[in-house]
Every structure is written in C-alpha cells, then in structure tokens.
Image (cartoon, rainbow, N blue to C red; front, side, top):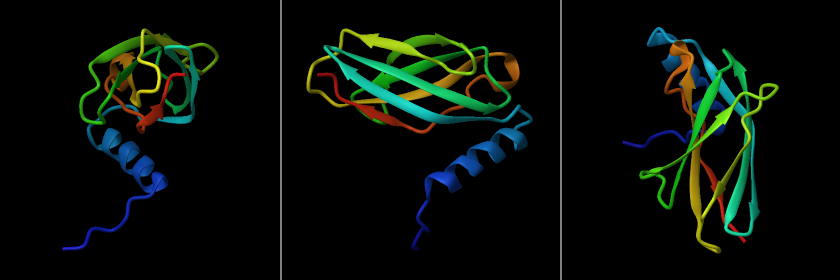
Length: 117
C-alpha cells in the first residue's frame, strides 16, 4: 500500500476537520518562528479560527517525546515564549498545544525545529 504524500496544507486542513468532527472549535496555527539564542530558543506563532487564550509550547529532543513545557499567553493573537536552559548545538522539536478555553484545549500546531547557539 502506497500512502499519498501529506503536504503541510493537507495536514492543516485535516487537523481543522478533525477538530470540527470532535465537536471542538477549530484553531489553526500559522506563521511560526524559532529564533536561536545562547542556550535558548525564542518561539512564536499566530493562530487563526478560534483563538486560544493560552497555549503550551512542548519541546524535546525527539518528535515523539516532548516533555518540556513553556506557557505562552495570547498577545495580539501571537504566542511568544523563551525556552531557556537548552544545550547549545542540540536539535529540539517544538509544538504548540492550546490550554484554554475549553473548546480548543489540545489543538496542536505542526512540529517546529530549533538549535540553540
């Protein structure tokens, strides 16, 4: 069985539809950025659809295990955070997940990658 390639757009639409089918409000994360700094990453993204009040940036050294967490508040429909205490030169994977309000809790962004300087 050959699976079709999933483009970022197809995944975005699938995530939105999954949220609607589950009875949740649809949120889409866009314009994500990761800026490396000394032992840290500055992260930010915007949201469309139903805008969360707060999100949690999850991070770790594996796409499937992101135990680190850094909360970000909605600041003009953006969710900036500084994730510190990281190892310079090590690759980190990051994902945004909504934490409030109820209808959007758990909605996820794509996975971002960053390497602290």
